[in-house]
Amino acid sequence: MLNKTPFHSIHEKLGGKLVDFAGFEMPVQYKGIKTEHAAVREAAGVFDVSHMGEFFISGPEALDLVQKVTVNDASKLTPGKAQYSCMCYEDGGIVDDLIVYKLYDENQYILVVNASNIEKDLAWINKNNTFDAEVYDNSPDTALLAVQGPKSVETLQKLTDLDLSSIGFYSFKMGSLAGMNGVVFSATGYTGEKGFELYFDKNQADPEAVWNAIFEAGEEFGIEACGLGARDTLRLEMGYALYGNDITKETHPLEARLGWITKFDKGDFVGKETLLKKKEAGINRQLVGFVLDDQRSIPRNGYEIMNEAGEQIGVVTSGTMSITLGKGIGMGYVEKAYTAEGSVINIAIRKKTAAAVVSKPPFIKK
Image (tube, rainbow, N blue to C red; front, side, top):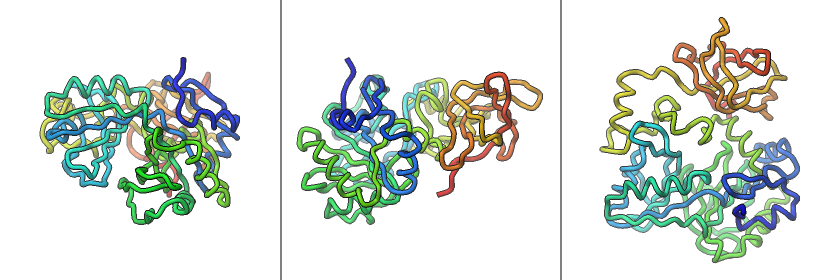
């Protein structure tokens, strides 16, 4: 039996194509991935992302626990700020990537994790909780909508007294939305566009009424319901990593272009010792972005990456046809010698190879 989000009946009414994703019945598309992708790039789109996990961490040593299990420095967070981070195993492999929120209540944080990793992440955090801190899984009661696109702020501003333009990137405020109190307006997202992720308690409001209010407010802009398909094409155009593809327990942050969130000077954290050794020894492969020359070729997860001599030098972790560029784009791990911007690599697609150029994401300039 698949889990259902609070917006499931709406997805059915809209004729969303529903699939099993991380144990949830989720819409992969409604009108079509191209239409939904374009709506987010040009106007506004709404994603149901209520399948994500939310863990509340509180208590006198809440920060100590967050610092122990994440690689970024959560001590730098002030109330109302959020931070991209990841958790590692002792061997440096990635448990998950996540967002850490510092709430306005002292010693209280929210960790937002990937839907497919909720149980695993919760067990990992609890295993490392040797502190005076409580961990509470609030995922089942949290409704989460991502409203993304150039017209997202204008759309939501009609429904709240908060000055949304004053909320900086990776910051959040709490306020009312369409008459409902206690909504977290987080200026975050997975699309590269302006927008907000809206968190609220599904038991304190009518999720369908919230959805309808947002669509009524955005109707003049051409707002669209968007599924997992467009979420994937949008995030890949920005070069955002996807857990299970670009980052896994077999990869570590330094080779996954996540060195910028790995703060060795913050004190101890799980995996620090191993990662320091890897840094000193030098990285022998790196996650890179690439763009294909041939507009008909589409790279996919698992395709081999070859050099000009026909030797395998890596593997594709994510790939798609960029709807904005009209070209194949992707990411993958390649040997260090081929990581420089402008390097020519070849993607093995069926029985042929297609030339590609290593290109630092994002693939589209915002």
